[in-house]
Image (tube, rainbow, N blue to C red):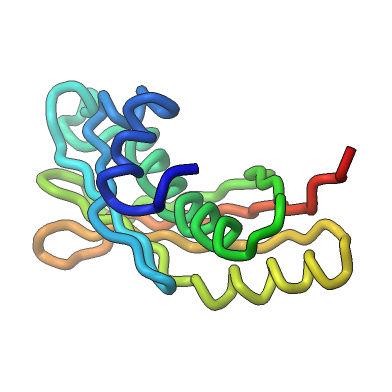
Length: 154
């Protein structure tokens, strides 16, 4: 995989997650502890109530948890598969304007990856992502249960 940075992640969206890209989801930052993405409410991603469609919010939320997982797996040097096995979402306020989603659970991911590598057993973890509007009010929150396991060597 190419170097994990904002530019390459947004290119990844275009080619591997085109529905997210077309909906306007973009990665804005990634560090060892946190990933952030944003999406602006537009005609292409709105619901009949003139706010950001729930599925677009879910794509942005899953993205920030997923890219943080990808970064951590890449840094581990191990071949590890990852899969979302459960998702829950809550909506707190009408989502209009620019919504910023973030996940700041890099340390949690590190621990679970280390456990998977050391035990050679599959692991699961719940990662949270939240979306805030320009007034810093929470519009939605999501929890994704990810399953990871070492890939078998053939």
